[in-house]
Amino acid sequence: MKGGFKYNPNASSFVPSFGPAAPKPAPTPAPAPAQTPAPAPASPTPTPTPTPTPAPAPASSTPATASPTPTPAPAPQPVPETPIAESKKEETKHVAAAEKETNPPETLISLDEEADEAITEEELKAELQKVAEEEDNREHLNLVFIGHVDAGKSTISGNLLYLTGQVDKRTIEKYEREAKEKNRGTWYLAYIMDTNEEERAKGKTVEVGRAYFCTEKKRYTILDAPGHKNYVPNMIGGAAQADVGVLIISAKSGEFESGFEKNGQTREHAMLAWTLGIRQLVVVINKMDEPSVQWSKERYDGIIEKLNPFLKACRYNVQKDVIYLPVSGYTGANIQDPIPAGECPWYQGKTLLQTLDDLKPPERNENGPVRFPVVDKYKDRGFANILGKLESGTITKDMNVVLMPNKVQCKVVNLFIEEKEVRKAKPGENLRIAISNVDDADISAGAVLSDTIVPVRVTNECVAQLVILELNASSPLFTAGYEAVLHIHACVREVVVQELLEEIDKKTRKVCKKNPKFVKNGAVVNVRITSAQPICCELFDEFQQLGRFTLRDKGKTIAVGRIIKFPTSTTTTTTPGAK
View 1 (cartoon, helix red, strand yellow):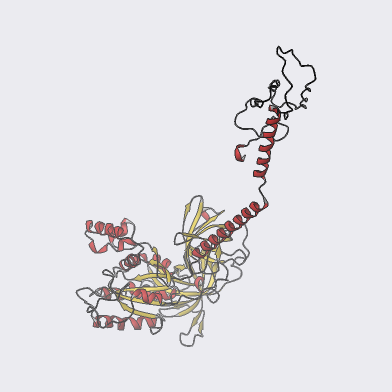
View 2 (cartoon, helix red, strand yellow):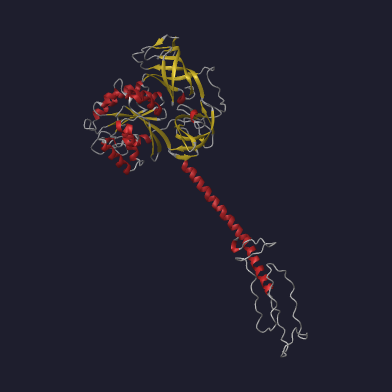
């Protein structure tokens, strides 16, 4: 109660009390001129019943007691207030004060309401500002760094993060000390992306590294793919999430040749990039500052002359879709700042960051059905967290979704972009999504989080068109019964070619032979493929990201293909059931 008031439970109505309970105040003495004897003291009862005070007797009446000395009658004086009356008067004043404080005037009420409205408006503005900050309107691009082993992919990725302020100088100095202790002084920039000890000890990227940086124009996700041939499946998983490929070429004497020869990863990575839907390629010719190169224009032009015919064979338009530029990943020359004057006078083009800022992101369907292939998973705070790239649709917090192929109904609890929680995500974003009502056993790489109304197709059989690249020497003929490993988005499945349906003429694109018994390298053929495990996929003509795939056998990519038909008898229904 304001003003020190509190409720007295012993009173039938509200009576303010002051401090601890105490007897009534002492009687006030009568004015000096009056000689009237003081009345009897007030009753100690907590709440006395007031009685009318009798008027004093007139002067002619008999006094109550005899006075030894007669005294003349005093002049008429005002009747003094009794202690009870004074106490009652004080209580009345305090009650009025309490009522005034409890019920302030109308002007005060209106001022309070205006203040509340002002606070509400400020809170609303703050909320809108928060939403605006969450929705970064800068374009987003996913970059995958590909190329032969030791070309400098991790070094350039790490230097990009350092130059754009994502890594502080103290961390760089720490990595530099660690690299020197291992006699690998020039590897310290690669430590930014290669985080586990196995990668740092061997100097080889094993898993796809993931990092983020931004410029004034765009936001970027870096996917640092491994370059060793033993880890091509990991490279495929990383490239499947990318929009733009950054092909790193080493200009050092002998290194370009080893990467570009028949079994080099430069060739395989460039071909896989096209197969996986990467239509823009930035070719970064690295190590131009090497003593064997020294920013030589002849070396730079010679590499381009050899690469162009191969990239054309991969179906890249080298005039529109391919950009070349020289850099030094170790010194950072031509990454953020131009090459120092005098070192490379023949190159007057853009830096790597300027080139990336000028690229246009691919078209994305925000209003399409949700398609989110799962790349990885882990559990945090009781919820399953899944990682991947949103290929289609818009996903929001508290949205109901279905996890295929197990048809598990679940709910989006949280969304994270670059470890920042958001309420909504658009296609093209690399996300971490926390979902509820799902068991770990129902989540695996290759599962697809999709729309509940139009879920992704699930099948064990499909008809596909294959382009045979290069078969293994031990299996020079591609026939019915051929077993291989299929890579489609983040899904990896063992499949069997059950039937060769039609061989296609490469020039006319028409059927030239039905039911061939076998085909060889370079052939285009329609086949029927089956898998023991269900696959989440779509028709290529309807959804390219989930309709293209590669076939690998014994560690080698032997064919690329696209899904052209689903047998209705083997395709699951489009209405998911609750688990």
